[in-house]
Length: 184
Image 1 (tube, rainbow, N blue to C red):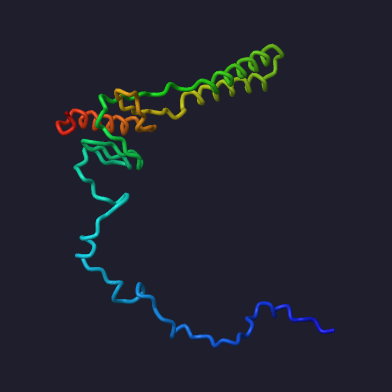
Image 2: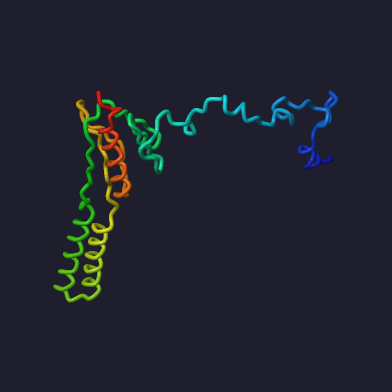
Protein backbone atom coordinates (compact mmCIF):
# COMPACT_ATOMS: atom_id res chain seq x y z
CA UNK A 1 0.00 0.00 0.00
CA UNK A 2 1.31 3.35 -0.89
CA UNK A 3 0.68 6.26 1.44
CA UNK A 4 -0.50 9.57 0.05
CA UNK A 5 2.00 12.36 0.21
CA UNK A 6 1.72 14.46 3.36
CA UNK A 7 2.15 17.63 1.34
CA UNK A 8 -0.52 16.78 -1.18
CA UNK A 9 -3.17 18.62 0.82
CA UNK A 10 -1.12 21.81 0.60
CA UNK A 11 -0.97 21.83 -3.17
CA UNK A 12 -3.84 23.53 -4.97
CA UNK A 13 -6.08 21.32 -6.97
CA UNK A 14 -6.25 21.85 -10.68
CA UNK A 15 -9.47 23.50 -11.71
CA UNK A 16 -11.23 23.24 -14.99
CA UNK A 17 -11.70 27.02 -15.32
CA UNK A 18 -8.80 29.00 -16.68
CA UNK A 19 -7.20 31.33 -14.17
CA UNK A 20 -6.52 34.93 -15.07
CA UNK A 21 -3.12 36.38 -14.41
CA UNK A 22 -3.04 39.20 -11.81
CA UNK A 23 -1.94 41.75 -14.42
CA UNK A 24 -5.12 41.36 -16.44
CA UNK A 25 -7.48 41.90 -13.49
CA UNK A 26 -9.41 45.16 -13.74
CA UNK A 27 -8.34 47.86 -11.31
CA UNK A 28 -11.15 49.35 -9.21
CA UNK A 29 -11.79 53.05 -9.86
CA UNK A 30 -10.65 53.98 -6.35
CA UNK A 31 -7.24 52.52 -7.01
CA UNK A 32 -6.40 54.40 -10.21
CA UNK A 33 -3.81 57.13 -10.19
CA UNK A 34 -6.20 59.82 -11.37
CA UNK A 35 -8.59 59.30 -8.48
CA UNK A 36 -5.78 59.28 -5.93
CA UNK A 37 -4.95 62.91 -6.55
CA UNK A 38 -6.82 65.33 -4.33
CA UNK A 39 -7.66 68.83 -5.35
CA UNK A 40 -7.86 71.56 -2.70
CA UNK A 41 -11.31 72.62 -3.82
CA UNK A 42 -12.71 69.12 -3.24
CA UNK A 43 -11.52 68.99 0.36
CA UNK A 44 -12.68 72.47 1.26
CA UNK A 45 -16.19 71.88 -0.10
CA UNK A 46 -16.63 68.70 1.95
CA UNK A 47 -18.03 69.40 5.42
CA UNK A 48 -15.97 67.93 8.24
CA UNK A 49 -17.66 65.81 10.87
CA UNK A 50 -16.71 64.01 14.06
CA UNK A 51 -13.65 64.74 16.18
CA UNK A 52 -11.96 66.77 13.42
CA UNK A 53 -14.93 69.06 12.89
CA UNK A 54 -14.29 72.76 13.14
CA UNK A 55 -15.99 74.37 16.13
CA UNK A 56 -19.02 76.51 15.33
CA UNK A 57 -17.95 79.11 17.89
CA UNK A 58 -14.62 80.15 19.41
CA UNK A 59 -13.53 78.11 22.39
CA UNK A 60 -12.52 79.66 25.68
CA UNK A 61 -10.49 76.60 26.69
CA UNK A 62 -9.16 73.71 24.63
CA UNK A 63 -6.74 71.33 26.30
CA UNK A 64 -6.44 67.56 26.80
CA UNK A 65 -9.74 66.59 25.11
CA UNK A 66 -11.70 69.20 27.06
CA UNK A 67 -13.19 72.13 25.16
CA UNK A 68 -15.16 74.96 26.76
CA UNK A 69 -17.09 77.41 24.60
CA UNK A 70 -19.69 80.02 25.48
CA UNK A 71 -22.56 77.57 25.06
CA UNK A 72 -21.18 74.15 26.01
CA UNK A 73 -18.38 72.05 27.44
CA UNK A 74 -17.15 68.94 25.67
CA UNK A 75 -15.26 66.69 28.09
CA UNK A 76 -13.67 63.63 26.49
CA UNK A 77 -16.25 63.53 23.70
CA UNK A 78 -19.33 64.10 25.87
CA UNK A 79 -21.05 67.46 25.33
CA UNK A 80 -22.79 69.29 28.16
CA UNK A 81 -24.85 72.39 27.30
CA UNK A 82 -24.40 75.46 29.49
CA UNK A 83 -27.82 76.90 28.67
CA UNK A 84 -29.50 76.28 32.04
CA UNK A 85 -26.33 76.10 34.18
CA UNK A 86 -26.15 78.55 37.09
CA UNK A 87 -22.69 77.96 38.56
CA UNK A 88 -19.73 75.58 38.80
CA UNK A 89 -18.59 73.63 41.84
CA UNK A 90 -15.24 71.88 42.38
CA UNK A 91 -15.35 68.95 44.78
CA UNK A 92 -12.24 67.19 46.07
CA UNK A 93 -12.77 63.65 47.33
CA UNK A 94 -11.46 63.04 50.83
CA UNK A 95 -8.63 60.54 51.13
CA UNK A 96 -9.95 57.04 51.73
CA UNK A 97 -8.95 55.41 54.98
CA UNK A 98 -10.65 52.06 54.34
CA UNK A 99 -7.33 50.33 53.66
CA UNK A 100 -5.00 52.45 55.77
CA UNK A 101 -6.79 52.02 59.10
CA UNK A 102 -7.02 48.17 59.08
CA UNK A 103 -3.35 47.92 58.03
CA UNK A 104 -2.38 50.32 60.82
CA UNK A 105 -4.37 48.35 63.41
CA UNK A 106 -2.81 45.07 62.26
CA UNK A 107 0.67 46.63 62.40
CA UNK A 108 0.16 48.04 65.89
CA UNK A 109 -1.28 44.77 67.21
CA UNK A 110 1.54 42.76 65.64
CA UNK A 111 4.14 45.16 67.06
CA UNK A 112 2.56 45.05 70.54
CA UNK A 113 2.46 41.26 70.44
CA UNK A 114 6.11 41.24 69.31
CA UNK A 115 7.04 43.42 72.29
CA UNK A 116 5.03 41.15 74.64
CA UNK A 117 6.75 37.95 73.46
CA UNK A 118 10.08 39.71 72.86
CA UNK A 119 10.27 38.79 69.19
CA UNK A 120 12.31 41.19 67.08
CA UNK A 121 10.88 39.91 63.75
CA UNK A 122 7.30 40.54 64.94
CA UNK A 123 8.23 44.04 66.12
CA UNK A 124 9.88 44.78 62.73
CA UNK A 125 6.88 43.38 60.86
CA UNK A 126 4.49 45.50 62.94
CA UNK A 127 6.59 48.60 62.26
CA UNK A 128 6.68 47.83 58.50
CA UNK A 129 2.90 47.42 58.41
CA UNK A 130 2.51 50.78 60.15
CA UNK A 131 4.74 52.40 57.52
CA UNK A 132 2.74 50.73 54.72
CA UNK A 133 -0.44 52.11 56.30
CA UNK A 134 0.97 55.64 56.27
CA UNK A 135 2.14 55.30 52.66
CA UNK A 136 -1.25 53.92 51.61
CA UNK A 137 -2.99 56.95 53.09
CA UNK A 138 -0.47 59.60 52.07
CA UNK A 139 0.16 58.71 48.45
CA UNK A 140 -3.25 57.75 47.15
CA UNK A 141 -4.53 59.47 44.04
CA UNK A 142 -6.95 62.27 44.82
CA UNK A 143 -9.98 62.71 42.59
CA UNK A 144 -11.24 66.17 41.74
CA UNK A 145 -14.79 66.44 40.45
CA UNK A 146 -16.27 69.37 38.55
CA UNK A 147 -20.04 69.86 38.72
CA UNK A 148 -22.39 72.16 36.81
CA UNK A 149 -25.12 73.47 39.09
CA UNK A 150 -28.49 73.60 37.35
CA UNK A 151 -32.04 74.22 38.51
CA UNK A 152 -32.72 70.52 38.04
CA UNK A 153 -29.65 69.44 40.07
CA UNK A 154 -25.94 68.90 39.64
CA UNK A 155 -24.24 67.36 36.62
CA UNK A 156 -20.75 65.92 36.91
CA UNK A 157 -18.84 67.06 33.84
CA UNK A 158 -15.21 66.25 34.65
CA UNK A 159 -13.27 63.95 36.97
CA UNK A 160 -9.51 64.20 37.15
CA UNK A 161 -6.51 63.79 39.40
CA UNK A 162 -4.67 66.91 38.15
CA UNK A 163 -5.96 69.76 40.34
CA UNK A 164 -4.41 72.67 38.34
CA UNK A 165 -6.00 71.35 35.13
CA UNK A 166 -9.43 70.99 36.76
CA UNK A 167 -9.10 74.52 38.20
CA UNK A 168 -8.33 75.90 34.71
CA UNK A 169 -11.43 74.16 33.33
CA UNK A 170 -13.46 75.61 36.22
CA UNK A 171 -12.19 79.14 35.49
CA UNK A 172 -13.08 78.74 31.80
CA UNK A 173 -16.56 77.48 32.71
CA UNK A 174 -17.11 80.40 35.07
CA UNK A 175 -16.12 82.86 32.36
CA UNK A 176 -18.43 81.05 29.89
CA UNK A 177 -21.32 81.28 32.35
CA UNK A 178 -20.80 85.02 32.80
CA UNK A 179 -20.37 85.66 29.06
CA UNK A 180 -23.07 87.91 27.54
CA UNK A 181 -23.86 85.39 24.76
CA UNK A 182 -25.26 82.96 27.33
CA UNK A 183 -27.38 85.51 29.21
CA UNK A 184 -31.10 85.52 28.43
